Image 1 (tube, rainbow, N blue to C red):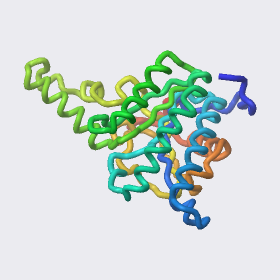
Image 2 (cartoon, helix red, strand yellow):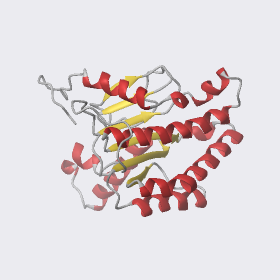
Image 3 (cartoon, rainbow, N blue to C red):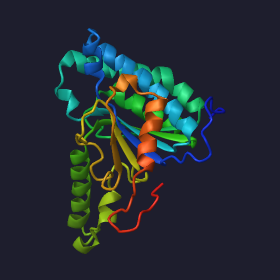
Length: 249
């Protein structure tokens, strides 16, 4: 990527993988007397700022919870607007992401999606497959329980076929069937809007992640907010179930 506009101090260590639950678009809009879709539009701008900041700070992987498998239950008009924003984001931003050497990865269930959406997701992954400055993981039509159930089903099918023995089913084996099998677990999970829950996001992968909850709504998220969350992360002692703190990043 290009030379950072705001250089990072040499002693400012950052986590390798940051995952973000982007929450509060609707409430941001309501607080300003605006339609919910305007909050989602401003949320897309926050995504752009965050990707840029992550690259400048030296974060290698950033995962965003863009659309959950439960979001389909929202009003049809809002779902339609969200799909439109996704289409425009990929069409308008993909070339810039590719130019900036950003790799795009999509996790989540693709079966049953609109064929046009599926084509756009595949295009984003294929075009940027060999980029290595930053990996942007987009959790779309994603639910952690559903992901774990799919992985368990795949393992069960292998056991039933004789390709695996029950004794072969380990944490590592089950993890190899998850959508994120080629990615390290997140070091830091950030949720905006002040809510303090994971909401079916990366439940398996976040077993030992540090969780930071920030009060601001997602459309207001910027580099300063990200740096503050990382500063809090750096104060934590990561022991991964042991007695001795480990860096983990």
